[in-house]
Length: 238
Length: 221
Image (cartoon, rainbow over all chains, first blue to last red; front, side):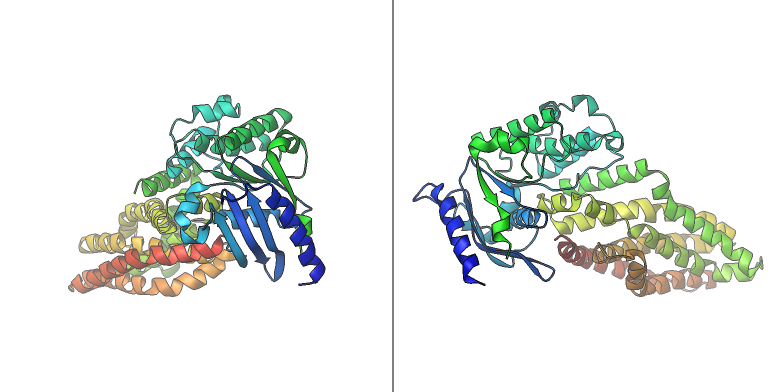
């Protein structure tokens, strides 16, 4: 590793650490986290710290490792190096507990075209043990009129709303996920839906939740600005 | 257990809504088996001789046909990530998928088999043995097939690779399945063959879901 890179990492770490309450280990922290895809190091030596009630907005060009970082944090991808802690405890110590606290929204919409929007949500609610009453979640993203329409006939933006309504399902349940990992959640959403998403995320943060969100700027960034740290992945790419 | 029931119900509903996709296996089963008599000629002595073997070979190929799509749709649309993150373990997922596959392929083959036995002029004494071997053998095909389907996830030309991987593993089931039907026609005791087929099923039930889960973990990255 060249010294200059280590230097830039050091500075970045100190600025983010400043936001953390001193003397207590809370929320999400990573220590010298590294990720390798194929033969290439996507990022290395990543130190992040995020308090409950705060969001982390990841920015950076395509291929800078935003999605990889989110997948590593979710436990979908094993880190090549380093450690992830939740409230000071390594997540590798109890994988089941970590899975139970993660809500992950990826690029694709995990919806079955031949099932209706309600059937899709109902299935995920049942599997995750969420409250089976999906009505409030449908209203939260204003897709209540689409509930009985097969997902095949929905537009890209409407499908995204159905995917995001899953977050609301967890939010409306007892002991829902506390760590939200959202990979460019606003893709394909209109201005109204972006506000609904921002409100959902803000409600989650006000409930002492934590969110890591990759974005390319835009309205979601502005709406979350007061409750979020920013992190540029560009500075981490070796 | 609730998780397994939910997954099976979803897969059955998807197969039902998918319409022709789910019926493809059984249609192939009937069409392919019907073609053979045209090829070998309508000799009343030959057809019962080869009938049991052909029905078993075609059933095996029909089961293989729908295996490629066992995990692929969930892998493509990101559902597999969410299934992994859910409280349901990958082992339970593997078992649920194998059950759903058997219900949408094996059971349909079982229903169609008596009709084919008629085409091949199989004696009445062979019908019950044929159905019994298929009842024991087709769940094994689904369980072992799930390992192959999980291993070939994300591979290009996965279908060819899947056949290469699985056909050698399917051969023992084929030998004892077809052997039992032949034995029943010849009037021999088929108890040993049925017990071996039952043993295969129990071994597959105990081992295959874990192997499938390990292969699925590799596919999630």
